[in-house]
Image (cartoon, rainbow, N blue to C red; front, side, top):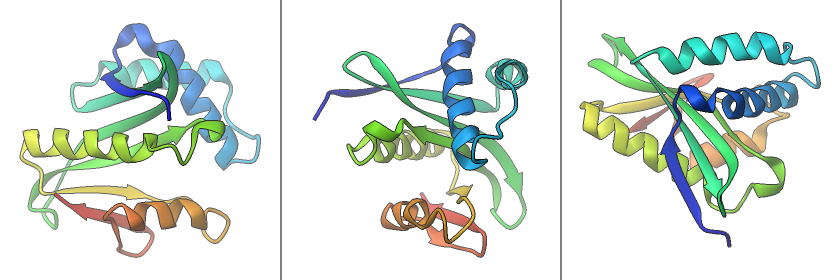
Length: 151
């Protein structure tokens, strides 16, 4: 198994973020993702937002995955909580421990910020059942179309 490391993305990582988010959208939409230039504009805005943490996972110094974590606030959540808006690992690198490591980074970030929960939305079922099963195995629970992890 390759050595896996994670780090926060910054403005200089916009190209990497765009490639990964575009690949994620392309996979989810069956090849109908927005143009990379449209994704780039959104990525630059996201990376400049203090309430957003983008994390790049690398294996053997090569980017292999990304996670975008947003700070949200809701009464039902008891105040601030984290929402994972994107989590993507290159298909050929899946099932190698990369996504669980990104989830652990999200949990550490959440604890440091005083959050009690992480939430995310799984892709449509049943096509993406493997994705839903992954999150369930990693401590999330179904709340309808959204999932929650108590931290």
